[in-house]
Image (tube, rainbow, N blue to C red):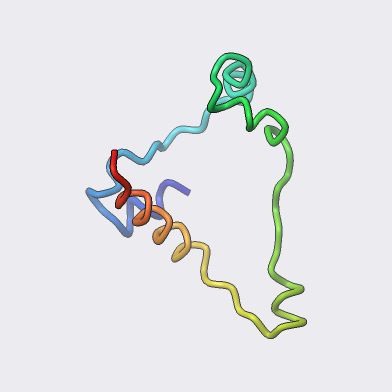
Length: 81
């Protein structure tokens, strides 16, 4: 996933992490880091979803995942530090 903003945003995406945090480390952090604590129940779960029903019932077409990731990254870059 990190490759998409790096390709499309260039230098603006220089700080995007490219490594994946090991599950053991993530679980340990949920015990000591208040910001990570809320993720405890989500770790290791499959959270895949589709837009198939919305497309079928409503005729709605989802945006590409690449465009969505880039737009989200641009939005985050616009936030004050």
